[in-house]
Amino acid sequence: MSVLVYIESEQGKLKKSALEVASYGKAIANQLGINVTAITFNMSDASELGTYGVDKIMNVNNIKEFNAKIYANYIQQVAESENSNLVILSSSANSKYLAPLLAINLNAGYVSNVVALPNDLTPFTVKCTAFTNKAFSFTEINASKKILSLSNNSFGLVQSTGNATFENFTPETVTSNVKIESVDKASDQVSIADADVVVSGGRGLKGPENWGMIEELAAVLGAATACSKPVSDLGWRPHSEHVGQTGKPVASNLYIAIGISGAIQHLAGINSSKVKVVINSDPEAPFFKAADYGIVGDAFDVVPTLIQKLKTFKAQNA
Image 1 (cartoon, one colour):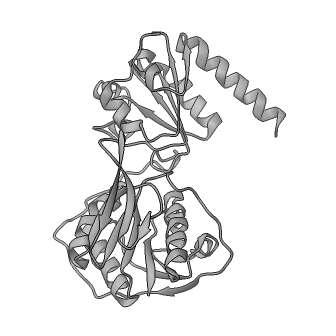
Image 2 (cartoon, rainbow, N blue to C red):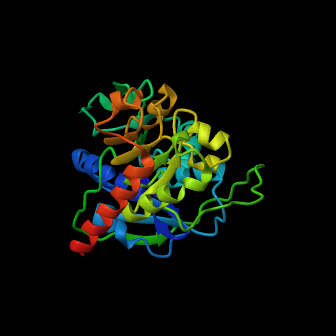
């Protein structure tokens, strides 16, 4: 018997969220007194997982693109072969598609947006965010099999000592009527989902031609770039950068909002971020009420100064 963790990767590299899932899985496994098994896809080397508590890696090869139905079926097969009654996933877009399918396959209880280790094991109770991150709920799972979806940056990375055995798993083949025509990926940018820091811009930047300073600040901080809904609607930035209740949720350690007023839909999507910094020329902007730190000033004056200060600091501490 073991805890099963679904490990996501991108172009053969482990995602940060996957290492967090492994860390969380190890912590629960310690409580239960069992091992951790990981399922990976198309990984030639996943040995790093051993340093985050994984004891055994089951790798599935020859899967070209993500398909929720096929992935859910293959995870089910590994869960059954390993006698895993607890499966843990991240809160990525892919996991949100496959988790309900997996729950049906395993006849399991499924809880999303988990932010902490179980309060109790009997009955099994977990803490989750609710009402677009405005509150917490404590959810009891009575099903014998359980699936947890862990919110990004809620548990952190915890290294362990140990090595993971690696073996290729050949599942029974399944088919899907979903056909993937193409996948477009930005390989040179930090993913919003995995970013520790997100730099986001709004209509206060006045136009797409001024986005250079957002990208430069993000580059200095090693951050992902994002935007508010009006900005993506106007075509200034791609919709893939739109964060908020109707866009991508953000749970970064640091979220910097520049020229964003702070509509309730935007705040709902970034409320899980640990530290929120706002730069806005309007002292009455709603975002200031939700911010941990705020700067009232013109972004075209503040941001270049901030960039220069950060560059100087990095040079002095190189």
